[in-house]
Image: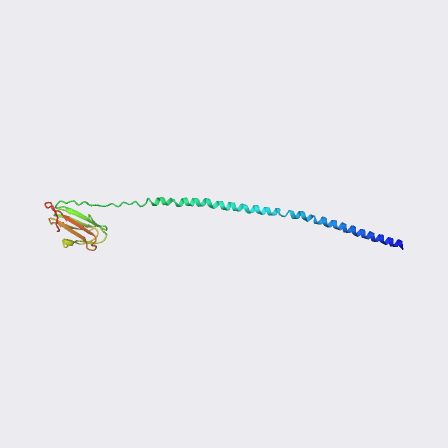
Length: 201
C-alpha cells in the first residue's frame, strides 16, 4: 500500500512539473512574439516627413511671377500724357484792315463770306465805288441801314454775284447790313479832302 501511494505521488508530482514546464515554455514564446510589432510601430512617422517637403515647393513659384508684369504696364500708361500738352497750339490771326482813303473814280471791293464783310470798315473819297461780292454759299441781300436807310439796296445776290454802288456825297458815314441777318454789318466812311470832318450821308 505504501509503495503504491508513493508511486502515485511521484506521478502526480511529475505531472505537475510537466504542467509548470509547459506553462513556462508557452509564456516565453508569447513574450517573444510581442516584441516584433514594437519595431514596426517606430517606422510609421518616416512617411509624414515626405508630405511636408511637397507642400513648400508650389507657394514660392506662385508669388514671384505677377510682380514683374505690373511694373511694365504702368510704364506704358504714362507715355500718352506727354503728347496731350503739345497738341492745342492754334494761332488766331487778327485781321485788321487799315482804312485808307481811296482816290476819286476808283473802285474798292468788299467781300461777303460766312464770317461777315471784309473789310468791315472802308474809308473812301467822294465818287468812289464799292463792289460788294457775295462769296458765301447762300443768297444774300445787302442794304443800307440806320440814318442811311434807302441809300442803296443790292437786291438778291446769288453766290458769286456782285453789286456795285458809287458814293458821290462829299462827306459822311453810311452803314449797311444783310437784309436776312442784321447782325452782319459794315461801314463806309466818306472823307472829304477839303473838310477836316465827316458827316452822316
